[in-house]
Length: 632
Ligand code: MSP
Image (cartoon, rainbow, N blue to C red; front, side, top):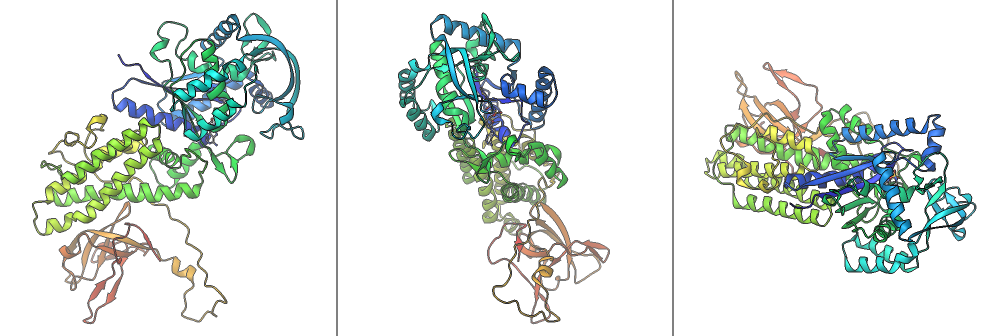
């Protein structure tokens, strides 16, 4: 049997609360976990909490709680947040658990027996906030390079012979170009090791909290030495069966704990114990605010569930609002550099990608299958172009995942959705229907096939949205990766379900566009730009049109406006036959107070010019505009 794919996040310090930065690494692993599971591959996703160390002890004291009660409470809040975020971790390890303590002590003993650990005196500075020893030369104005206060330590302590592993580490890194990713960070590690490694102090005087050094209870194991072992401890090591998981396939983290800890200390510890090294160690960048990393101490944390709740308040279903956070985080993933994950960025991607691209593709496909295909999934083969694009998207997704680029995988899924929208525009099913063209059914099937493939590709990232897409298509969730883009994914003859908008558009603030120079003096019939901007004009597409009974002037028109449907009654029957309107883009006054005309509700008004004969000439964008786009 194939070895289980083993993926890990860092274990989070319990002196903080879960924020969108922590959630980012969770998400990256969760997407990989769900993707491998869809491929039918055995996979295990580990996360957890780092509960030893002085920093946690100090946080417990500050909170006025017993340390154990404190870590229980905060570890619980991490779990609760991750569960609410739909992160499908398989194991949650806590460094206060016996299985972890046992593994730490066991590895310590092995290394001490092998002579890789020895007793010596440590005199120097310690940065509690980063839990790291700091060189004298790196202390400036009483602060560590991370800007934290340092305390003087003068203790007899245990040391790890890190200096002995520099050459072997370099050799391994050079022989395995994808051991450390991305390449830019790998190069930093090489430089760091080439400068020479020093032995590392790996114990501290026992403050009554931490993993006691075996045979030396006056000291505890240094928290980083202890924490890294969690990855091995969770395999059950040294009990039989641990090799089913070890070596880990990917340790994911952000850059600050890459070079010194995961790319140097950890592999050296494993080498010293003659244990296999992880296959890939991968660091992404930070979510930043201005030039600062998001962190509790800087007071700039954004909690994932708070963000979710903002979208719930906006009218998004709670399960789908979690997906908004998941989607936008992955969309903003800083792989090489850092990224601003601000409400502005989030709103932009929400509107453009979810409300607009995905919403339109879903809504238009279902509406058109309903209207032109009796709401039934057609049987003829899909057009080769769509099949080709869907399979191409799947392959691009797979390639990206094989290169540990979930952000690019998402891009492949989004590309397919954008292609689907273009396909609908260019194949114009409304026109095919009008001319009774036999291509109509294959085109409708192609649209559904594209949508079904998008459901599969989006599933690892936004599982609840994928479920909603499947249910609207009247299908069971597409769980099998190999079917993505294939005809078998789309059983013919079924009735499609009810189309419901998933992601209502966020109203963006109107742009300030003051005229340059002196403003002209207002005259009685001017409107100000603010007054004008209160009128919400939107691009909409006509889905259906029919005469209003008992009137020779009025047409009842159903419109798609982004994610929304609208019905308007327009007095244009003399100028347009209903079938000429279907599929056409129009400009809608979207916030006109609803009114009843001949007993039929009209939820807006279409803009039209007066024709020479007193008829109406509808306004239409010069070329296809995104549906729902604002008109200024
Ligand atoms: N306890 C150590 C890790 C030990 S692993 C053996 C630790 N914990 S932490 O709570 O500070 O979490 C750091 C990790 O959280 C980062 O490496 C990253 O995975 C994630 N992130 C925390 N803040 C982040 C950002 N602002 N941006 C991106 N990732 C963030 O270090």
